[in-house]
Image 1 (cartoon, protein in one colour):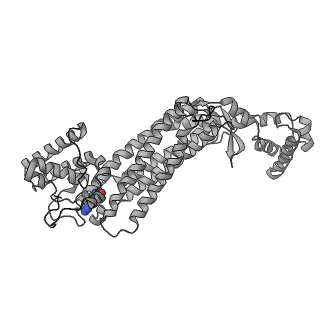
Image 2 (image 1 turned 90 degrees about the horizontal axis):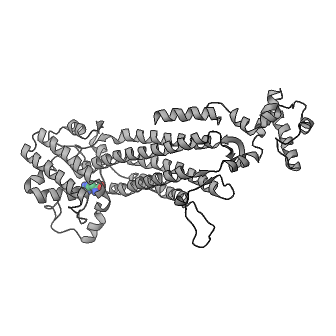
Image 3 (image 1 turned 45 degrees about the horizontal axis):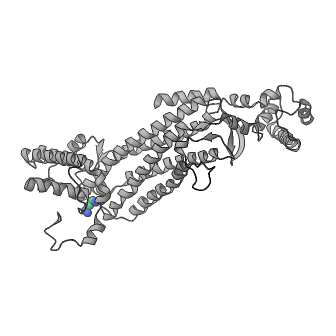
Length: 455
Ligand code: ARG
């Protein structure tokens, strides 16, 4: 019989029970549920709402249930409606009347709000840890490639010279913002909702601050209706994770390109790529393709949550049970993607020669040629036009800016001297981009050291 027996004259229809039940996915919060119940029990005791010996028995038995679930001696009953009902009924099975006192001054509405907040707090911390690990791997790759010149792209067309370190450090910046966003979401998740009960608080003399302290929350919710029906923090986390996935997906796309014969900038280790069932020559970057693909379902979860909440009247509605599968799937996905991409990046080989070759073709030092003329007193727009004519000449005559003779240069402008070759030299082009945030090895190294200090 369900815990709400009394009002009901019939057992719940079996199919309805299955439909209604959330235990298949909310059972992962069992530890948080028990921890929350223990804090609630201690508060009931302190406020003399239940007796000390009753509290002692409840706390002891709840800890015992946690242990047994942990070591597998107790199996969850998946016919239960949800993890909250299951643990309470297991407690009552063991303690009889005393167990029935646990739910005094509490509702599943504030209970589930508490559990999900506690659960998400833990998950936010572990996602932040994973991102930090990934950042550390990227810092190592960057330090090894401070002078690895490659073309920087716009519109996927070779544009200006940068280094591989500079390129990788762009992802470090994204990931650092991801951490900031998660930490910000953590602040709003770290608010304790217990005591709001079903929707209107309680007439018992409870001590919400005490529960807050026991469970290490920063503050308590300030309106009982909002406290049980707020899922903003779930949506925020789903959004943070979507942005992380977007970053991982962009990086994946670049890795996929870089592995292709068209680029061959990197080679993935055999243990992180797969072959084809028919084409013997193939080595495919499946991991990165899957990350790119899985980003779609994470975006889907964000839209699920936003849509699920948009028409709900205050306060709790059962629709909100749908929050869990969506946010759990996003969490699981981002964690597995972070865990999988790390060793893949750690072991990938960088083909410095091919990056350099690509950098030498495509006139990515054209801006530097124009800038040279500007330094000789020509207005930028004119310098730009002269350089454009030089590039057209090079294309027609199969030359590049390094192999053009001084005479050919002078045919276009008499401002050219021997020192033009220094200005269009690729290494110098990178070195001279020493503005803060630029690709010069000194600047990139500075940033690497700054990031190392905060990580
Ligand atoms: N399993 C429910 C959820 O996830 C728990 C809260 C149910 N409350 C209720 N009054 N039906 O949201």
